[in-house]
View 1 (spheres, rainbow, N blue to C red):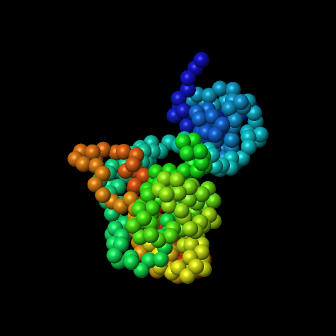
View 2 (view 1 turned 180 degrees about the vertical axis):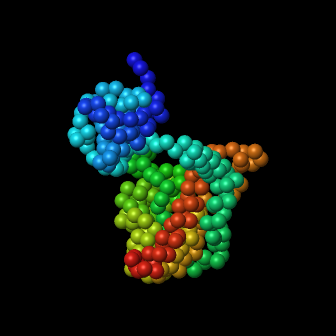
View 3 (view 1 turned 90 degrees about the vertical axis):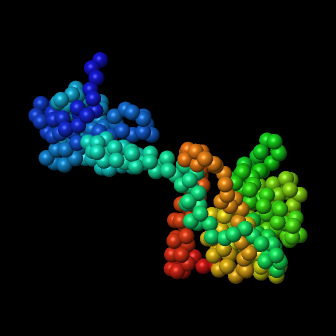
Length: 307
C-alpha cells in the first residue's frame, strides 16, 4: 500500500475523468464527528470556483490527483461547521499552538490564578457586628450538584456549592437568621437537602426558578419582601460577589456581603509555579467574572433586563 503525505496533496494538480487538468487541491477537509483522521473530501480550486471531490471519486492521489468523475459533476464547496481545514499555514499554526499551550500553562499556575482572583474579589470577610441589622441569609447556587448521591440516597451539593452552604450554615448558627436558598430546580433541592442533612439547618425559603444571578436576585427579593425582609447577608463565591451585590441591590435589598472561598494561601514555594487543575478552575472563575461584569452593566444600561 502506498503512503501519501497530506502536505504532498496540497497544491497538487487535479485531473478529471477526461484526463484534463481542472484545478489544484486547495485544502483537505476532515469531519471529526464521523472519523477523527479520515479525509472527508478534497477542496479543489478550479476556474469555475471551489469544488469538492469525495475520496470514493478518486482514482489515485499523489503529485497529481486523478478523479473518476468529470469536473462538471464536482459539487460546489460550501463552508460547513464541523469541518477542520488543513491549510498550509505552518507559521500561524505553530504560533497558535504555542500561544494556546502558554496560556493554559500560565492560567493553571497558582501564582497567576491568585493574581486574577485578587483582581475580581472586591469585598473583605463579613464582619458580623456590622451586619447586626440583617434579617435573613441568602445562599446562591452555583458549583454543581448530583441528582442522586448514593451515599446519601438523595440530591447532594458538589464541593464548590457545598463550600457556600457550609459558610451559610455557619452564619445561620452564629446569627440565628432564617435562610433562603436560590437556584434552579435540582440545584435548589440539593442545597436544601444538604443544608438540612449535613448541617441541621432548615431553609425557610426555597427559590427553585433561578438560572442566573439576575434571576437569583429578582426571585429572592420577591420572596423576602413579601415577608417584610429587606436586609440580607448574601453568601456566594468571593469572585462572584461583585456582580451579585449589584443585582441584589438593584432588586431593592440592602446587602451585607459574605464572600465564601476567599483568596488565601494554598500553595507554597515552587508549587506556586507548577500547574494544577484547581488553579485553572480559579482562573476560569475570575475570567468569567471579568467578562460577566461588563455584560451586566450593558444589560442594565440598555434596560434589556429589569428587576
